[in-house]
Length: 281
Image 1: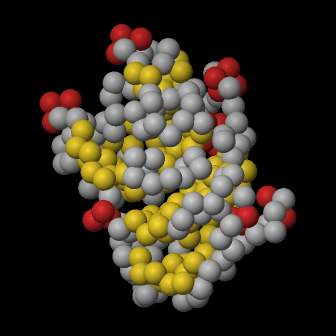
Image 2 (image 1 turned 90 degrees about the vertical axis):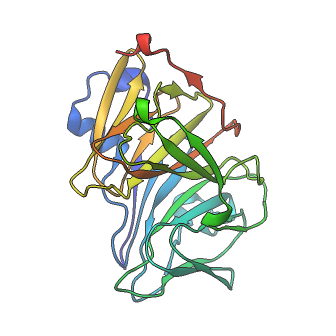
């Protein structure tokens, strides 16, 4: 088993003004999320979020982080969100095992000592996308089946942004310290995940893109300030860090899905500042 966690630092808008493509990708892109039998994580200094993939095959896997975070165990001062986008699996939380089929999610509160991930079939492993943020209080662990996710249809075909947002970890249905997490599915013929673009200066966000309707498709994730936009091209099952000061939007060459995760000082889902189209450059 390989356990890998890379660190990415926070940047101001001025820091990236002269970055070329490779510099932008190095600083904001997580190019590989799921690796069979391994755990691949990124620690971003943007609100100290940890995110990545756990892909168990023959043996169960557990995230073990202590000294690197200055704690005795991974979730001593953190909370954790999980969504499975692969085959059937299980998650064992301090000895209690739960089934996790594709699209099931889970919220795990601060103080949980052991979270063990396993697949039912090594040939079609579960793909657990995990996101962890600092916490100050313990909230109850909660299984989040896809069938129970809050759905919110958005957009229309005329603007190529017809999509459904599924809220898993959301302040309107459960308490967390700061983590929010969900799943957006674009309909066939739509490519924009949000437009007009927006910022939400009170929280940062990560996006993990997957389930492309065309395996050769790509997503152009747009970031930067509204008057100086930049882009990063993503392949299926790659993730990108979006700083709080940056615009949040992207366009795909086909339809796709993505998992979004946010943290910061405001949990109000609609707390975003829309950018007039005429201001974009």
